[in-house]
Amino acid sequence: MNPNRYVLGNFAPVTEEITAFDLPVTGKIPDDLDGRYLRIGPNPLGLEDAAAHIWTLGEGMVHGVRLRDGRAEWYRNRWVRSASVADRLGEPRRGRVADERLDFAPNVQIAGHGGRLYALIEGGLAPYELTGELDTVGPASLGVTEQGFSANAHSKYDHETGELHSLAFRYGADFVQHIVIGPDGRNRSVTDIKAPTLPYMHDFALTEHYVVLYESPMVFAPERLATGVPFQWNRDLPSRLGLLPRAGGTVQWFETAPVMVGHTLNAFEDNGKVVADVVVHPRPVDFGDVGASKPVLERWTADFAAGRATRALLHDRPQDFPRLNGRFGGKPHRYGYSAAAELYATPSVTEPDRPDEGFSSALLKHDLLTGVTEAHEFGRDANAGETVFVPSARAAEEDDGYNLVYVHDRDRGAADLVILAAQDFTGDPLARVHLPVRVPLGLHGSWIPAA
Image (cartoon, rainbow, N blue to C red; front, side, top):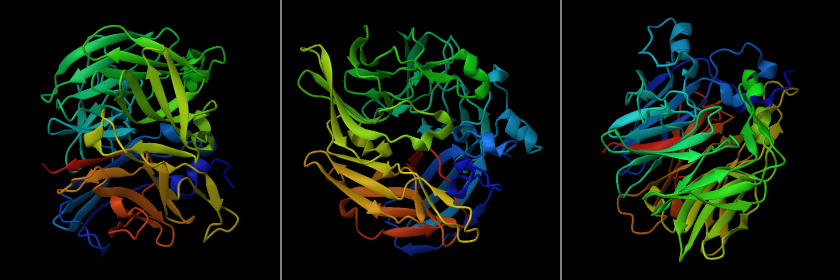
């Protein structure tokens, strides 16, 4: 038995690219869902050493479903064709990156901007452009700066300005860059931010007037480059929350306990304070076993007058991949959604001595006004990834819309695209789109509206 859980069960990669049309549906797909639900994640193109495989290092594969007029028109899964992926598939390369050492099939985020679709990663690796049918166009110049940085994963779209914001870092650089990309795809501004401890700045947030930054004791370690995850925990460092004025200026830093912010739900301003709701890893993260961490949802508040930041626990169930109604990004919000982050193993149907590894069997809806959290439990035989919230066409309330998520159905050995009514979160799904194949547990998803 292979001891590496990240090649077992629904962590295991799929080996084929599939196209299927007119997908069967249980229930009814809302008529106002017109677009593509896309999710990307690591899916190694062959495993040379399964026991030593690090899950986050697999080549990126995109899984997508096209919804229109109450129908699921198609499902596709495609590897991002970096140079090495194209070579291994025996296909022509799609363009070239400036530095081949920075060429890898992105596996972290799908972003739509300016009518184009991009696969993004971090650490200075090149973005790739995709077509609406998930084929690879080639390396993209999205956010490229004079110093050779480019748009990183966890880029944020500003609904007020139409701009895409990215916080970009490169391994070994003692600064990061905040890059603002206009609707035309061109950089509007680039701001250097000193980072002398070489921190791993995985995510950030926006408010009306600030860029919210997180420094942690997880820092770049060049001696670990050969492992593919060149970071280690420096126990002598604190964590810090930083506020960079969007109009220009210097970062104001607020020191906190030594923890690591994984992902941001949202941030906003409140009477001279900046509030950030974040998923926090209270202990050092082992990149070789990321699922073993037990992150929780916290609220961090930076008080300019007091000159300090405070932390408050919002919910203690292990969880990750927080999302909200994107129209409330950078503004006060009431609701947030996340995936329960709980590793477990259940006996395999076909091989009782080889358990199927699961990661999440529930989605959570947080009402941050009342403090009530609802859980939509899919059952221990199911795996649910990150959910995406899509407002309904008639939306009058913040939670008037739909939660879309891929859920593994172990009985079928394949995935469903499950659509929940966010205002009836624990009720039966509105629809289950039955995909013909399995969608492995992955990273971040996006709703790309047709308009």
